[in-house]
Image (cartoon, rainbow, N blue to C red):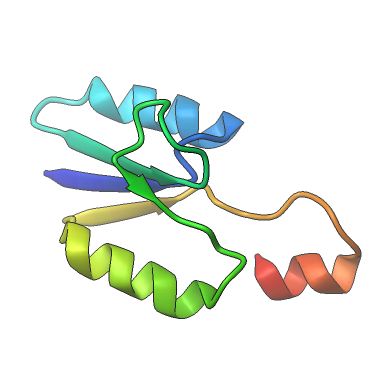
Length: 83
């Protein structure tokens, strides 16, 4: 099973991807805003996030997506809109 972890470079994404890699038959790829750190795909949710995520998922063609991406700073309204 191909699994794409969005937010792979964050705290939660790092741990989720590590756990998923231990599952039999799992092929885990990650997307994050920070290059490196085991991330094959770069994603920046600040610019056209819906379109960008749709393009990324289409290009990766995973069987499953785990979203660990999200903003952690800003006012409550901005956080609700982004996340």
